[in-house]
Amino acid sequence: MKQSVLWRRPLGLALLLGFVFVTACGSPVVPLATSSPTTASSAAVAQSATTVTPSTTGTEIATASAVAEPSVVETAQSASATPTAAATTSPTATLVSTAAPTAIPVPTATAAPTATPAPTQVALAPFDPALTAELQRILDQTVADGQIPGAVLSVSVAGQAPWNGASGVADRGQNRPMEPHTNVRIASISKIFTAVVVLQLAEAGVIDLDAPLARYVPNLVPNDNVITVRNLLNHTSGLYDYLEDRNFQAQAYERPERVIPPTELVTYATRFAPAFPPASANNWDYSSTNFVLLGMVVEAATGNSLAQEMRQRIFAPLGLKQTYFPSDEQVPPTAARGYRGNIDLTDVAMSFAFATANVVSTADEVRRFAEALVNGKLLQPAMLEQMFTFVNGKGQYNMPALEYGLGIMRNQLPVGPGPNGAARPPAASTVVGHIGGFAGFRSAVWSTPGGEIIIALGVNQGATDPNLLATRVFDAILTHQGR
Image (cartoon, rainbow, N blue to C red; front, side, top):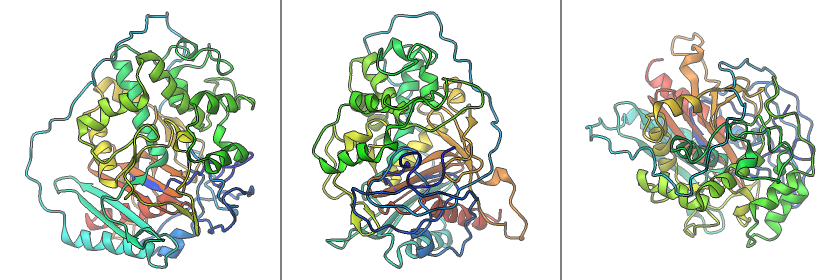
């Protein structure tokens, strides 16, 4: 089972992308490390759930155990033991059959996106001033002692105009302030974007979710005639996570200018035996290799780059003008720099995180993406239902209630008691979204299933858990609503 540590197996999963798309997620605590970017050590981890209370300080957030981000590892420095969640909840939905259907021809042309959002303009009330003040206070506390350089947050509450806030600095060297619309690496939130592209292509008949991987990307991984596209989306393939090997991951920092082919990432993963047979009962393990393969499936099925498909299907229709797909697209120089402890990890080969953790965006645009997704503006109802069919996430990443759908997480944020002192019901803090960590950043995006509350956040400090801040924010919103 994956533990809430920076390195797991040879190393862990937190390439440091601290941008948080918050719906509801627990958060661990880890001391900042200070070793060089090319060294790392394993840390044994005791498993325990973490509850964040409204009194959590910025220092506590900064030194919170860096829950191994479900996608990318950091070789920046050693990690110390961090608490993890021991509980494992049973899945609320069973995995859809993975039997391979009769082969169908794969179209060469790419179908247009299933939906282009054109919402009717509705007058919204201003964001509540009292809640604005509380959320800004939380951001200011988060960065108060300088351990976390900067933080960005975007929040939407039903019936109110969205609110965007920031605190701290985007660049320590230049003392450049973090602004609400500063670009940050969103890390594994990128997986939701990749999943939406795959699912739109499935709606159009270009990709078959239950077809074997060999139909699109043959002769690259073991069991490619058994592993289905669906297995890749919900991490039931059993494939080893290439980001687990710190020696391999270090190459991304040693030669940041290099464009690493996705085939090289996947081929490296095949040096290690699969964790379990594809789609075998009661088996699940998060692996970024799955999403690199999904990016390759998209490109093989369409003849276009994943960057083109993502821009055509998501960025452009939603008007996400500050969202980028590096290394195919250039990121503005005003983007925030990422750190682990005091080490600047900004210079990294972003192609190392192809399709799995490479997208750069703003908190506001990540929130808008999540809003479009849960409101059915990106996928048809039947496909959205498939996306939200979850399997047990085995309590990984310090989230005891973690479940995983087709590229999306479901979780319960460990919020505190309600205003009357009684424990809040689980439904109050059940959210869908994703967390991430890559190259000096942590991120999270979480939404209530119906989209009544959506939060997206990011910090440019890899040695923290984004769910600490996400939980404080979500708790404050519930408290303000008297829930």
